[in-house]
Image 1 (cartoon, rainbow, N blue to C red):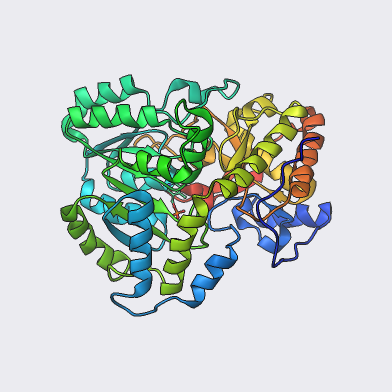
Image 2 (image 1 turned 30 degrees about the vertical axis):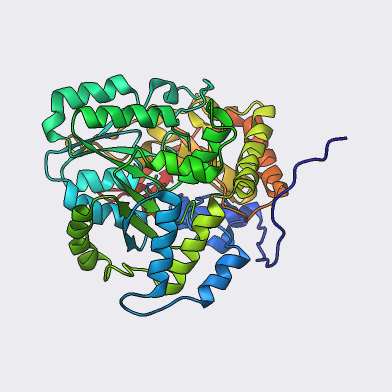
Length: 457
Ligand SMILES: *Cc1c(COP(=O)(O)O)cnc(C)c1O
C-alpha cells in the first residue's frame, strides 16, 4: 500500500486556542461592528483572517533570532539578508523595510507621479492604495479566465498580453513601470507562468519599461510552476525562483508571507541608481538603509525564512493543506475558486448566497455567518475591500465577491480544516434562510475594510 502524505515538520511548541458559545460570538461580533478585523483574537477559534505574519517560525529561524546584530549601521544581520537575496533571488541591491506596503511606499515615492498609469495583474489592495494615494491609476490586465471561478486554468494570475500591449501603445508615456504580482493575491492566490513572465518582459523591453514584481508569495508561485508548467518538473524551486526574477528589474516583498516571519519586508533591485534614489525615502520613512524598520534579529529570521520558504518539502506540505480544505468544500458542493490557490481557499459568495443583493455585501455576510457558526475567522474579498471609486465615490462592485480562508504557514492541522469545512457545510445547507445582509455605518476614505463598521439591514 502506498503510504499517505504527511507534514514535513513536527511540532515543538504549542499555543492553546479556545472555543466559545454561539451567544458569546453573537455579542462579540455585534460589538465589533460586524467587522471581523474588530474582534479580539482570543475570541477566535480558528483564525484564517490572513496568512500574513501569522506563520510559525522554524527552529532554525528562532536560532537566528539569538544571533541578530542590533548595530545601527552595517549590522551582520543586514549582510545575511543581502546574501540570501542575492543568492536566492539574484538581486544585487536591496533595502529593508518594516513590511510590504512600506516597500511600496518607498519605491513608489521614486517611481510614481500624479497622472501615471500602472498596469498589472489584479493589484493588491495596499499596492492599489499607494498608487491611488499618488493620484495615479492602477489598470488591471489580468486574463479574463481569472474572473470565472468555475473555470480551471493552471495560471489564473497571468497577464493578458493584448490588454497590456494596448495600454502600453495608447498610454505608454504615462506608464513608469509594469507590476506583476506573484502569486496574484487578489485573483485568488493564483500563479503566473514563467512563459507569461517572459512575454511581459518582451513587451516591457519593446516599450522601454521596467518591471516590478510584487513578490509576497513568489515561492508558492514557483511551486505551481514546477507542478504545472511544461519543462519545469525537474527543476528545483530555487532554480525556478531565479528564472522568475530574471524577468524583473525590481521587486517589493512582504516577508510576512513566503519568508515566514511575523514582520518584515524589503525592496530589491538591479539598478544602483534606483537603490540610491530609494535610499533617500527609506531613510525618511523607514530607517537607515541597513535596517529600514527592522531589528537585526528579525532580519536574521527573514534571511533564514527565505531558505526555509524555498524548500520543496515545506511548500508541498503547505500547498497540499490548502488543497485539502478546498477539496473538502468541493465535496460538499460549496462553490470555491478553482483551482485552489497557494495560500487560501476562496469561497464564491455570489454563488453561495445568490438571493442576497450585492448592495448588502454577500461575502461579508458569509464571513460573519462562519464566525457565528464555529468561531472561524475568514475575510471578505469583495465590495468592502474594493472601496469606492476615487472620483465618483460610488461603491465599486468587483466581478468576484469572495470570502477568503487564508491558511497560516505551519500553524494548523487538517483537523482544523475539517472543522472549517463542516461549519461551512452547515451554513450551505441553510443558505436559503440567510435573507439579510449588512449596511455601512461608518467607513474610512481609503482601505475602508479594515475599520468599517456595519449593521444588519
Ligand atoms: C501582503 C501583500 C502586500 C503588502 O504587504 P504588507 O506586509 O501586508 O504590508 C503587498 N502585495 C501583496 C501581493 C501582498 O500579498
